[in-house]
Image (cartoon, rainbow, N blue to C red; front, side, top):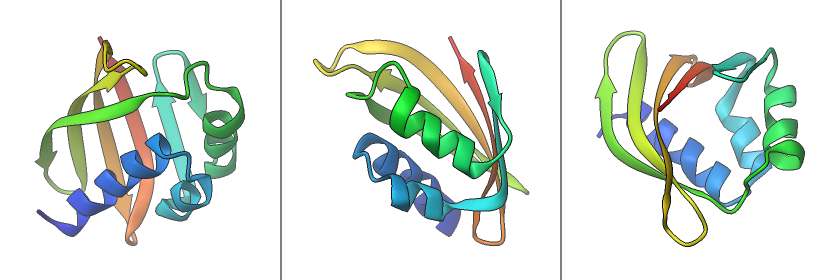
Length: 109
């Protein structure tokens, strides 16, 4: 496991455990996220959505595989609902800079 592996695993733990201050601390000031339904242009907008606006909060991200390369890391996983049921599969592609997450592109299927 690399430091980047630890970083993305910490991202999912913070998100799943509703630790939004920890989530924010993992993101660089220039963080953006692109996902199929919207784009976030700042870490504050992303964390605010995750904390206050996302439709499902009682979920768990199950990491199935981590692929590392320069300058980023990709994670293949499943989002599980409160009963452990699979809601959908995802691939998150992280850009990492200065020890933090600088960008994230999410693909769902």
